[in-house]
Length: 199
Image (cartoon, rainbow, N blue to C red):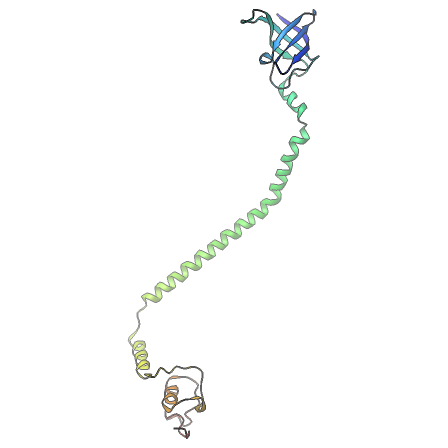
């Protein structure tokens, strides 16, 4: 039989209390028989059934229903205001909206940069491979050998163009034969620095 009443007292540290029914009788209850959510409050209205406790053979309240807190969701919302719950969600979504274009743009830039790097790397590798596989034609090889043979003293074109800049007649002759833009052979006969009295 369903009865109704109010909580008369509750001992939180021990987990039990008493309900005073509408007839004024005190009925024992244990916290394990109480709905989850909020701790029992003195004066709270309830409905319940009475059963015999198997251990003590005394009457106790079971199937307790809270009339002041009809469902657990309402109880939880009373203790945690909605604005506190929803504010972090709003801030998070606003942050996501504000940062998503920036994150998207940085991702695009990173992908493009990586693509350019890989493309340049592949192109350089292919160019090096082409150069390594390229055959040296006979004419280029003979010119290189001739220049090497005609330059036993190790002369090199270094920008000097006048007789006064030369150290020997052999060096002047080599410059006229091998370096462009020299001004040491006035008559074009291949004999450099003909009028220089140093040699």
